[in-house]
Length: 422
Image 1 (cartoon, one colour):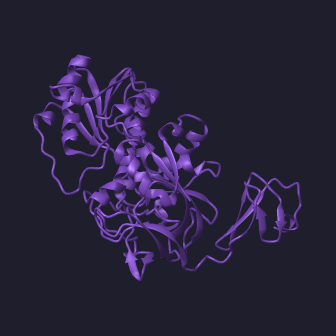
Image 2: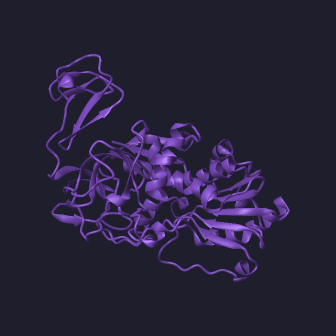
């Protein structure tokens, strides 16, 4: 360390200090003085060395109840316990699943910090953590991978038993690391990324390449991976096939990208917002339709358009009605319909059992079928190798304190993906 602290000018490294630990970045700037370093913007800043093991006070967007606005609050984030990791969030995406909590269609306890699609830097780790260390760039995982339970050990499984899709709201030990105004604040899906700092179980963190840009790579934490994987991994779209994608938001466009990568010859995008059609065509859709332009059921429209050859359908909205429409739209004998959108937790789905009797396959695609800790780093590497372009999915980038504006863009249909930066 001394050769850097003394200000040598030729070393191609930058020293960062966080949580009492040091690490290097390969893109260099020399030191100005001991404990003061030049960052990428060439502004000297004092290194933080005193946060490990201590409570951190920071800003977070707290939801105090259903159908209430986000409130930017000062919160306290406790140090990580054994097998836990505290992460400084750099960028986080706004996903429709977060809105399900706001609207009350997804079960959650309150107050809660939502957000689950992000990139951050490890600030400190608890006892026994071996897979990441302070300074690592990471993606929080709403679908953990403990590597010990039956789904994790099965080659086809990925729904780890440590997943919190039912609003439990706490970490593995049954407690929360957040407090606000003296009250405990709940976690969301093991992640909670609408905050400057969060704490996660080690099984909910994936180390990624340090060169990955946070404002783009954060989409691999949910939207892109879920949609892309639904096509290439869950459905296993075959070359030359016909696909129909219901919903052309960020996840739906990622499905389109996956269908194209898999070699589908016809990809039909379906949405009631025609403003999304051009973006869908740009990422690989061959045509787009609005169900409101037709008087007959969308399943009949698709059958007429394709000669009843739709082999794969994807529901990427999270509505029961469109789930049934998607199932009805794929071929009765050899079709596969994949539910990608998070379904409302308070309702039951009803459909004609003949859709299954005729050997039509209905499948779900939690996180696109990926094993999160194993596959997320690989997807980041593929992104850096330019195998797909995440920038096509991002329409708005806002500072974190403008989170309410980001959700208004989602509600108005103006955004595909809005990313919040810290």
